[in-house]
Structures are given as C-alpha cells and as structure tokens.
Length: 103
Image (cartoon, rainbow, N blue to C red; front, side, top):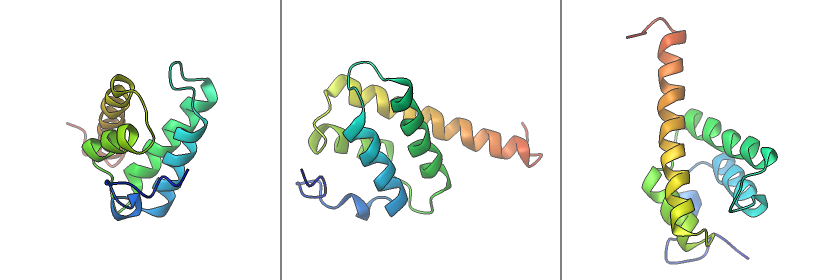
C-alpha cells in the first residue's frame, strides 16, 4: 500500500525523509494491539529522529496519519500521539540538562 497517497497528502511535506521512513517501518511492522519489544525500539527510533529533525512532524499530524493512512485504531493512534509528545518533551529536557540549562 502506498502510504503517501491519501487526502492527507505526502507525509514528506510534514517530516524529513529519515523520520518518514522510521515511522513507516514502525507502522508497517508493529503489532497494533500490544507492542513487541522490537516495535518499541522502532517507535523510540522514530521519536529520536523526530527530535533531531529540522522538519518536525506535529503530534496532531502524526495521529491523523496513523488513523487515516496507516489505518491504526483511533484509541491506539491517540495513545501513540501522546507518547510522541511526551518523548519529544523528555528529549528536549534532556538536551537542556546536558547543556547545563537545567531548571
């Protein structure tokens, strides 16, 4: 299935190519009900790549893509959206701490 084509448009318009590829790998291979440890590793890789990307995928666009294009159940897509936001916030706080800007 070509996940770039839908009303949502090209995911590459919203995120860098490495982030898009990491998200696709996660989505295509994941157990959608109970994540396997390998699924979690792919998910964390996606979040880390998103954190360092110049072109960030918004949490709302992630949720929309998961539901509309990748056909994830709404509740799981929303849960992943929340985990994505939390992960990005944690990585940003870590970067600040590491650079001596701890609050």
